[in-house]
Length: 119
Image 1: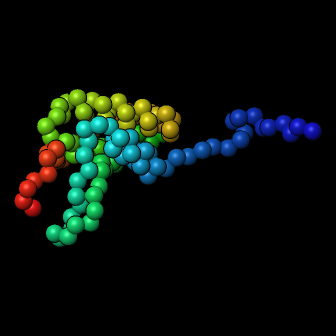
Image 2: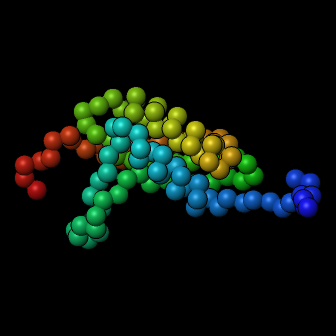
């Protein structure tokens, strides 16, 4: 015996919180070659490393994203940021079905590929 499913419009809704969209955006940005993780400090104390940081706003099916990230230096900032934009927008739209209306990227640090000899 098979059970008939209700019509799609009668099955309910799915809501994806902006906090989930933020995590998807951060993970996608951190996967792009050329992005860097930086040491996180509070009051001079090291608290591990962190990757990109995202903020999400918007309503309905449209979201606006603001990303803050660090990049490896030397490298092409323009090329890496273009790849970040493409990857983040694609992942957010694919995983959440939200449309990325705007994506602002701030490069807050350039991290040298060679670790400094003196800390």
